[in-house]
Length: 338
Image (cartoon, rainbow, N blue to C red; front, side):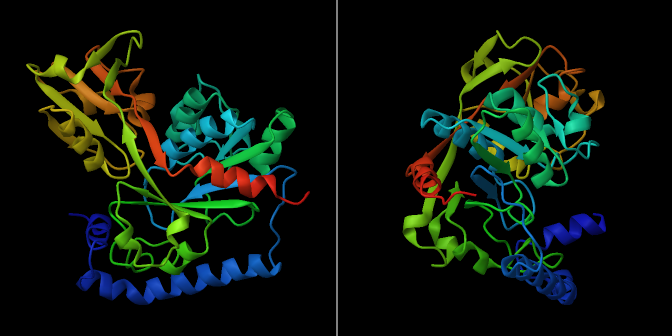
């Protein structure tokens, strides 16, 4: 096991390596806290857009379900009369931005999550290391947009926001220590300052009373239909794979979450976990004797050019309660003019 893997493995609970890294973690926390205070005081200036900004992020490293949440928000807010645009850093892509994301773009250039958002949301999607610049460019190119959704970016304080959402998945806050001793980008007390905490397949007990119950929302993903990666008009149910030799791949923040979803559908399969944002190659899907390869939508956008004909994609939708879109709308409808 490499050093990086050993460090990550130690994030679930305090161990010798995590303890050794704690001085660096404390320094990281001090710098992160000081930076946030500089923005809060105005010493570092945030960019205030002419439209409301809703940020969905987390205080831990790694994917926790933000992209399905942003897709849900885009649909729910559109149903309330808003015209959202989406900005993202474009993690994993080579494009620094600001740049629009088209449905035919290469994931290696724009990143897997922005490409998935562009294909699924029906919203204009722009990427950029500077989210404020990306949002300005999006609004200039799409004057009908009246709201910005920021996928990730909770710590990108240069972009002023009107509503903050933090997602916490079932892994919780790990050992509760800051990077690199633990998985935290910001200390747990930050959760008390956001407008909403979304628990993705997680229990409120892991928040240890830090967040008022009125600001807690639950989220889970639903999906039981598979689409052929090479021919989306072809569909299949889990039962159709009952007698097949099935392999499942996942290069997301927590691959086991995908595997558990498949198991809950009654599937038997061989799992293959990859790192988040894994740059797939044809060799990664070369499973001898496989009748079907199952993958997430996020993985699928990177595999379409070389995947075999027996590759299938599970399409999922977020289910959130109580109505988070209502809380967002109530806040931003009362937002003072920029």
